[in-house]
Length: 454
Image: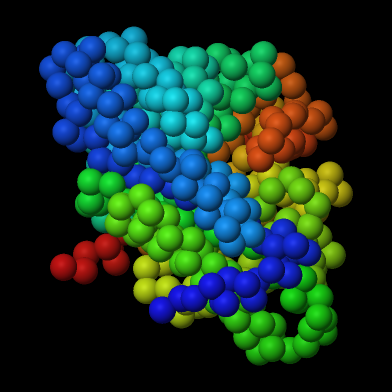
């Protein structure tokens, strides 16, 4: 059993080391909202989310006030909408109407974000999947709190290259549709391989079909805490380093476990998982890059970076699984550029390139995240980047993702502001050699041989 004393032990982490519970995310099953009539479908969606999530924000605020730990975001994830809207959506405009309904109800229940404007197309696209995907640019441009994701591959099925090609075009269109806001629509859109059903973090969150009717998932983040404790063992051996990270991750996860159990009890919704992810923010002292520097790198991107990140990710997970029986989601270390001041500094110093970030994604928690690229980057190049990341995920049996932002009208060396948790980013150069003939082949890259385990 977890008691309040364990939480009180972490007061110093909260007050001095920027520990927070990044999100309480309620997953809601919307399959029973499907209807052949679009208006009725939207009404069912509105009523169900309102009923389930009406007390989510207040409950999170109450828990935060009582235990003195910030709960930064309250979010909702929903069943991939391509599964819900298939019976009534005959055009992209129909899907956009559902998107606006979702955004309205997100504002009504006052959650920060809602994830699940999504399609799972790792093996092929249904007509409904394709309609939803083609609606994404307008949906992201006309909503504020709605996030979108598309899963284009998995270890079991291979990579759907038709979907990969299409997503390169969709990202370009999303950038154009929001060019007056620094192409911000792309910051709410992520392309995944091996997407988990229970991830509480945006933009990739959705409520998987294997989940119960409603569930509470909690995401905990503490890069500042880890950085602080590592400063106290500077120069110690790898054995001491690993043990220290593991013990710290254990304490952080116990905080999340307590919050999740309390939220579950008060809301009458089952507890799902704790996602222990060192997810940075633009705030000083809340950086994964600072941890890598403390481990011994001059800048992230220096030789040894991938090894240091692999060590960090593994010890975080080991500490987490000792603290809770239900660790899931992505759990590990995030390396978004715009959301981590240390990563931004590394890019500006010339230490970090997209190619090095790609190598780091082999061992990090997710993938190429919140990276601004030149606005004239071809759709085929974006598709090639997605294909590379999906291949890393497929072969290594891990989740990988791409959230890149081609900033229309801007080029390398300029900076784009996104605001809030999204931060700001220097625009990074991409490889200018073409891959159009490759991504236009069509079809599917088969699953790797080690996927056949049944």
